[in-house]
Length: 336
Image: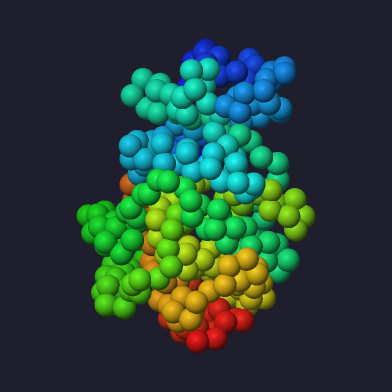
């Protein structure tokens, strides 16, 4: 999440008026993230609405304006997936459709969508019990999405990482850290030669960082921000989540207790195959490289005046070193 575009009060009020959610009370820009503009919206609420496509209770929503990376042709996939998983009972926010039934609208030349607000807070320092719950929730959406009728090709796989890295070199990647460019391309060559094929796959979240999970105590109340979701290997999605959750101190400390709990939670809902287990170390190196390249690109490319918190790509270089050194030992509780 982020804010790239300023919207005045009148524009926001007119936009919210297109939904059956009451009148706009307040709108607050959200600085986290780097891809879209987002606002926390509060309204006066609505009374007695029974339409699934309108908000039945509550008066808080997330308004998203799609700015970067997202192909607008993919919006029906992303928003439809939210509705599918929510209807399946997963802790996922549904899309608030407008009065005409549309899942998103146009504001000038940009698409906007209103999303259900879910209770909970993001966890900076998870406990093993919380990590177990996150692993189980991730496996739950993998199973629930199996009958989702739409597909989306993964654009942020190895080829996408290399393209992002090549774009970064124009912006002097080594200015982020000396030698970073050479290290990145050497790792990309390794991943191209060793990337696993033919693993169990389906619709995956592909970005389940702690700030994309809402919790109350040890319960997952919300999985959010599905805008990188795509058809990919389930074990890769688990590896992304592992890289996001199982480290502290900016990637410098590996938390074995969190890793064990995350894997245990996932396996309690969906068992990993032997091939998936064997592939986890390489998949995790790929997950780290994905965020090294995307963060490096954003570090160089983000406008100086954007309300955005840039993220350090070196956090994931440290994770990459851990995965390279530990191999399958980074995934306690599994055995090849």
